[in-house]
Length: 625
Image 1 (cartoon, rainbow, N blue to C red):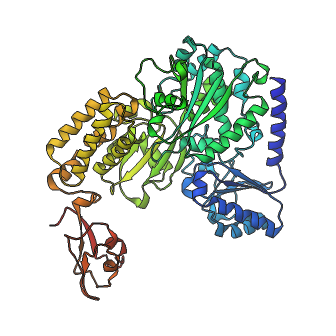
Image 2 (cartoon, one colour):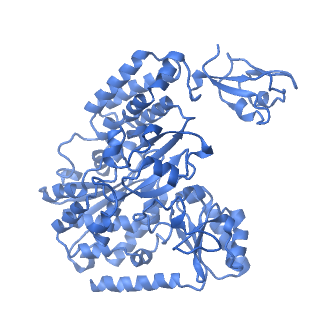
Image 3 (cartoon, one colour):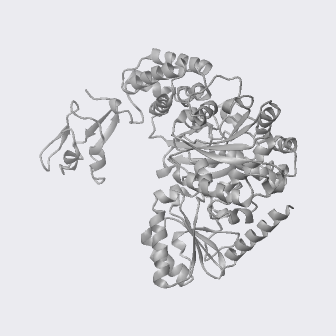
């Protein structure tokens, strides 16, 4: 082991062991973006106030997201006498009770508890790894998130960090590439191209210098995997970048991260400074003679800059528009030099492979999709959050075992994978394995890992319209198929959802989809039709209902629904009348009210305000004239 590195590891482990063996309570508060949005800062301040009031000496640490976003704010309390207990939904009002019982009286608060660390129960609280949400998971990339202080490099080093880099500096570039090839690692940004093969192209390409870019421009609606990793364990990505840099022969790397991720950028900046001070980046890394530095580039939030050639143009100071390929960036990329673009999770996987070996990495996954993958499980699922599972797990296992099923125990209808570039997979295919090839086979993609769950209240025509509206607005306009084709498709979908569609529209939509997929300039344009194609394929009956019957079966599309007041249930309480902003409801107090359909704007406020005990207002599919 490198002597300098060995000394750092010794110091880091001593600091970590001191924290673990502390006789003082250690309180971890999840203050990543999801925690902050749920009030974690107020919780943090309340904990500090409780400590001052009770005069208890304790250590309070801010950590990243442990993945249980549905239970934020999350607080974990460690004490020398027992395993760590994780608590959920700890808002500021609950802190005094939690602090008094757990910290002062040493009695875990079972009603707030999510689980314990390790394998031991505490007061009947099960270990976290045995709970339904964690049991199917294999946490490797996320293993440090929610446990370590992301602003403390020693926490990372003490938990195996930079051991992969220490190993990599003793290997040649080709030996590093061979290990990545042997691991079967495929790009976690969506395309799934073999990472080692991609690196070899760049390694062999002639050029005065070579560049590495970390693509952290995560722009899919409902996706937050990369952001959470950067906020909770930024050094894992930095370590992966340095290893990748040595593998391809680069001396400079860029992290392209959108400015809407201020916390991720802040923690990245801190981590880079710490890594540079420790000798993990910069000149003569760990005395090996290898030089590599990292620069952060803030993106302005354009979805198209997630496409690698548009991202390169943005770094160069140009407008973020895609460029024709070939040549591919591995041959001619940033400033015309060979360039590799990998996403956040791919680079974090690289550091794990070098730390633990190829055999360890391939223990999980399917034949063609090795390892684990993180997903943002969101939408109409009971337990939303960040999960990490072996590739090859089924959609059913993810939604019903990990996610706990559909919110309100409603019926599962579909799941959207891969964001706006992905497809909608119906309930009939919920046993589809979640891997690159299986998702492609059913008309969707892995994407970076967004997974939006829908119940029967979702209108699939409207879902297709929503995602297409997103990609159409985000189109850079550089090529006519995407610029004009998506606009024409959106116009047709708007007609269908407003009751103006025809059967011919379906044929035109499918023809446009095929044309755009075959002729758009970049991958984003080529995949934009996926939500439309998949919903037409699996939910054609809903399109026909909108077109032929002029009804929205899910009662979502405003122009194809109506609100009625049941005269046998209405008591004339007047709540719906007062809530109606268009003046469509009339009726005297304590007498049956009516809705003027010619004035009704179908906002749904009457249904929302009608007391549940009366249930007099109904929404029906179809428009009453």
